[in-house]
Length: 405
Image 1 (cartoon, rainbow, N blue to C red):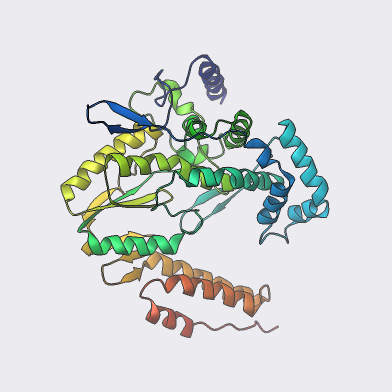
Image 2 (cartoon, rainbow, N blue to C red):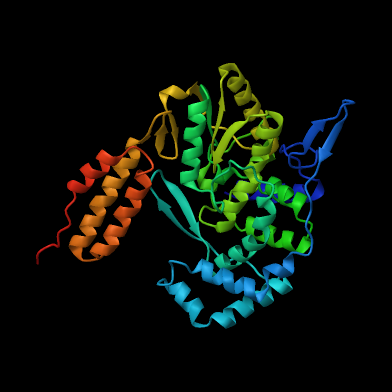
């Protein structure tokens, strides 16, 4: 433990003496992907995104803070910390405004817990006042980065979402013979802080806003260290594994910044690989083509780009090329040209949840209306596949009874 702490101190001191590179031991500046296009004369021209200044006052504007507070409390008004904040909401918001204006705001400690469906994940819940700040920040910068996003990125974006991604996937399955399916291994725990801040700095030229972003990003240092394995990329030195990594799962800012981070990969796929049929939801993405060899070539290039530019590792087992006629698994469904099937694990999870609802109703801890809302929500999602018989079968077998005392 003492040895690891000493390494961290040495690494931090070393980082102040030089400009951090994308590689752990490299001295080259850590800059995001610059979009290049060859001119007729053969010279490269770089197209840089527009930068934005004087954004910080919009973050601590009282109206923005109040709107953010209302958004943060949505569906959480019965929680104790939300009630405490709400009891003196004006005082709380004015205090936040003063701290943000004076740059004395500091994020609080996270509360950690695990969820186990569909797989084990460590969730980190920020204090309510921090969540208000997250909403206020995203309200200001999300429209800016939204302009740079590709059309076929569907996670955590207004007007997109799971069901539109499903429809787009089915459309591509009908038009192409082969698909390259990719997944980033341990995505949130391995997002590199220095690279993320460099990407943000390419668009945001407001130093106060960048300092707030850095403060929030740094608050997640070490939170997900237990969820990843140390990995050295090519060219790394011994200290590279100690680079600050990880965005806490549960923060609104984490979801937003994850999209900003992987947008570098999106742009590479669209501009350099020239892939016309590509879609992404969070860290799961699909590339379609009629030539299998092209997809294998793209997979090798993607592994190299993800490792060298973003310090991300594509999952060695989950990245594969296969025919679309065998069905493309994506977002809980298997997509065919003529129909869409719900994957078995999704059905198993719902049956388990249904048994929990029956138990809760029998104990009197939830009402029949509340249980019905949960069932209707799942049925509406399942209806995006060919599941009419499955839904009827499950519902016919479901009976809610109060436990007799």
